[in-house]
Amino acid sequence: MDVSNRAFNFCAGPAALPEAVLQRAQAEMLDWHGKGLSVMEMSHRSDDYTALAQKAEQDLRDLLSIPSNYKVLFLQGGASQQFAEIPLNLLPEGGVADYIDTGIWSRKAIDEARRYGTINVAASAKPLDYLDLPVQAEWKLSDQAAYVHYASNETIGGLEFQWVPQVDAPLVVDMSSNILSRPINVADYGMIYAGAQKNIGPSGLVVVIIREDLLGNARASCPTMLNYKVAADNGSMYNTPATYSWYLSGLVFEWLKEQGGVTAMEQRNRAKKDKLYAFIDGSDFYSNPIAPAARSWMNVPFRLADERLDSAFLAGADARGLLNLKGHRSVGGMRASIYNALGMNAIDALVAYMAEFEKEHA
Image 1 (cartoon, rainbow, N blue to C red):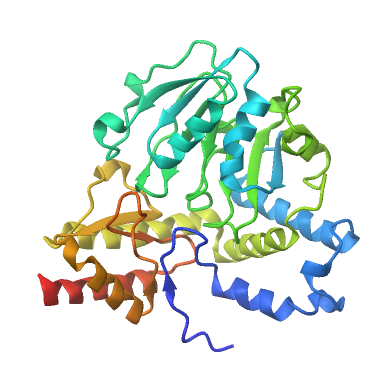
Image 2 (tube, rainbow, N blue to C red):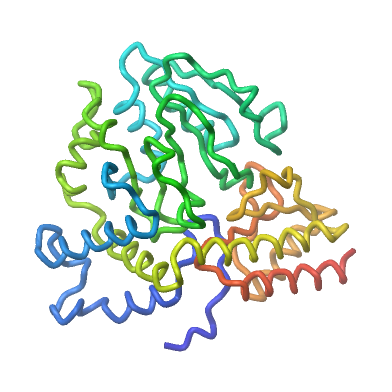
């Protein structure tokens, strides 16, 4: 297949997928492994699909070195459904959970969790205008918190933890936009969750990695479909799962292993973000307001010196195949999401265009 007309997709999600994965999915679309049918038509109870699903889980376990006392769940509803699912499973009646506010997605998690119990906002980046992270020495953690929740990377604001909070309660983290971008120590966390449509695969799936001792504590009012233990006991197949999204995610995991795993991704992603931030910082025409130590590796917001040029910048970018650079409507400006599937050639093309635009309009 000729992919010479493929654009560089800087969308925050659903995001770019590796071309090799898309090509393989295309080749297998009508006839998966000589079976005469598509994965989309395959019974999730069949031996073939069960093997496919199990391989996807094992590849993810290999990539992240997931300990054996953690369950890996492939669920539906996206990361946003987890905002309710987490307190229903982990926050007992009358208990308290600590949350860290660092941006829009962590605030959404806080607002939803408050429907189910007492939520202590132990720290907030609001006094810092969401441009830096609150230092942990200033956090006001509860003595008996059921868990501590935070978002390791704020996709919209471009604020990312470069460190793991040290807390006594189980640490629950939303890693939707930076999972698999570099190595992590899964044992640092009680639970990790991530919407698929950024670094894992297509939308329609959320991956949950949860320590086994946190299972079986759901409230009596927790719907069966939202109970982590039910999902774990049924291999994420209590009902029909998002079979095609699971399959495509498995192809992404295979691709990541072929690239050298998350260690190789770390080197690649570090070089990508360093080049883009260096260009922005070296320009008087573009700016990034985030404190350097808290800048996201995956989502790079930037502004033009004159916002009246925003439309012209975006039109020129689209004409050059640099797509989806418009910032989120809540913050404006520009945003380049540079997930695993985008290579250095995408960064080179973006920087070249930014330099050209600056020369014409500065």
